[in-house]
Image (cartoon, helix red, strand yellow):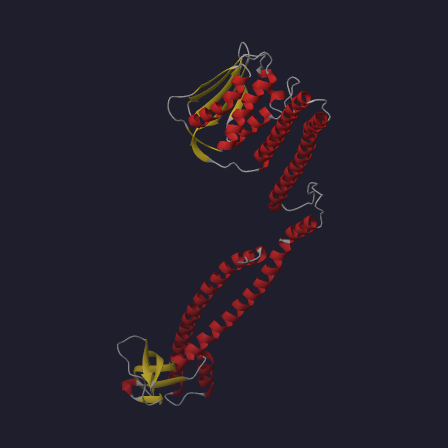
Length: 442
């Protein structure tokens, strides 16, 4: 499912609250218009009643003057009905039958000729033709006139708010687009690059986008380093495989040209050994590549049982060389969550390293122990030995502390296995021989 563009999201995020505020403002404005209309019309009714009362007093009870009628119509904003009585309740002028009042309120609502009206009633003491007494003026107006006036006010407000929101929507839409222009230009600049161009992005961008460009620059740097590492690895691997391949080819030619059967068998044995070395180097290269660029296949297994089986398989070859070989593990199981194949590969490399690089070895020991929340696997020999000062050269790929028949990958693989599992590997400080310990978190 496609997602909305960033521009649309920002537009919605900004505009929706404004629309809600406009809706709330519109509702308030409608209520305010209704209240304003009521207040204005009530004032106009009172003003009309007062004007009629004064006119009746001045004219002595005659009909209203034209100027008074015009004034009433202009002030009220709609048709006004009125009824006036003089002293003693004598009808003076206006409509004959005013709305009936319920109560004594000066302003009230009633029904006149089937229509709802608003009524204002004013009582004053006046003197007409020498008679003094209370005069009652009743003025009323249709409620529909008030509602029409309120609707007109609300409609004008709605049109104004709608026009403002429409203008604001246009401004926000183009404003968001203008604000996102640096992202668009950045995208265009990156798209215009070739696959081989991993140079840093130096384009000036707003502060909010600097994090993106910084992340991209770090990613470009990591990709470039990875590509360089691949190139170096391929070059080193080709160099390391060239010698075993040449040896296999040479031994094969020598076996073919052997003068007799005994020499041919001897040369075939050498060919087999060279082929094994070549296969071992290829397997180590594959393991190293998997460690660097693949994911570990984590499983839970008994490390003590796995190492016991591995040492049993390797033991025959070690003993055949005339060496003492031992494995010392815990009495019970030692559960570990790790890639079993890689862990066994690391231990086998530790043993192979001891066999290939240690001069004068007569004894080889493998020990498994638990230290706090770690499993410690130690391989010791009594040969020429390694010191902690040799660690940099020993754990570096295709590097050897001393020349030997090895490929320089064994301890590098062990180091990568430790790093892959969050563990560590170190050369122990011992008085004689060599001791290398691999620690893996339980």
